[in-house]
Length: 153
Image 1: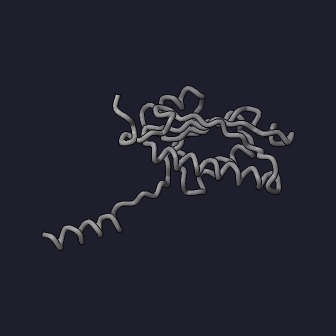
Image 2: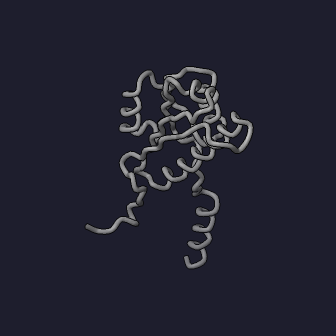
């Protein structure tokens, strides 16, 4: 038993348990419906980190999907997204992350920020002023504290 248990744990932790975060269930609301907004959503999907499970018909649908746990991330693209980028201004979009699992939420935020930066740089032709300004909001756990790190009341 003293030999078997450490070997078993080594195999489980080495091969069976993974901390990779990919295919995060995402709901998208595209009010702009332009080629740029579709390209941004395709960028999210092709990254492998996000999997768009639903394209919402209206903003209220996002709440229901996040509340039910069918999606962990929501991306809402406003009507003037492509116009703002074409004019050279920073286009804002709303990103809502379910913070009930702080580890996944933190990693998803990092992935989103990196993807938005690289997409904006590709549109502008280089590292200049960011073209996309994601307005990020974390639901259920705005401070992204894990259960073990919270202090007793």
